[in-house]
Length: 299
Image 1 (cartoon, helix red, strand yellow):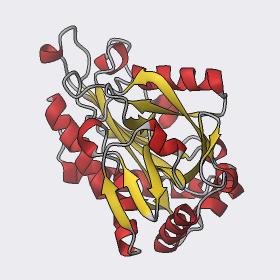
Image 2: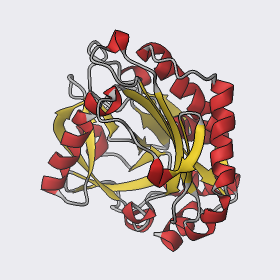
Image 3: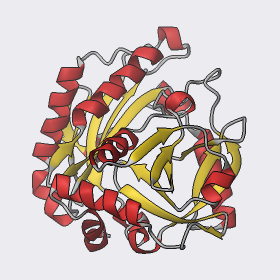
């Protein structure tokens, strides 16, 4: 994708000209909040929900971006429109909003904030083939953050535990997808995706208390209800994943991604399950895009 146009601190610039100061706290300490959505046919999907989550995180982090959520939504939609001429080469966009606290030695004295909104091509190559074969989940020793330390419902750049989990999973399987456990040994979340299992026709996902509640996770729950499926949000142990009938991840770009192995063990028949496929097909029908086919085409 050739150089896109980004919103940066009140102006419109080529993304190659976006410059974050080395003393910006977003760079120095990870003192930044972000969110990421995607488009279907060039139209932002669930943008309002993503912006709402961004502003909840900003509120708790005590960062004032200097613009309202409505203004952020308008800017985000304009970024998509300004880059529409580039979409044919990538299929659809990932849309990223970021706000740092700005430069400063102390958090309470830092500022002004750095605000940017950008688009990029979706990394279809990471997962396109997995719609047919399923992903390999690797349960890591690296744990989710306890909410008593940093509430995981904050979507921030302070994500070293995710980095370590990805490195740990890659030592077992370079193509593995890490799943972090919480301090009690229950399934938590992946490094940017939520976990679901299917057992006896019921769709089950960990509760939102100790993880980042995903926009896609919520949408899967809504789709499941619309299909008449039973849904539960409850604690899951590794055993529940190993012995599930089906499993899948939910995430912004892949939407519903089958999981067919966990720590080397086959899940169910070892192929994408019927409930997983049904949910993905329903999502595709809703947005008017064959999600798996698009990923393969543009991978």
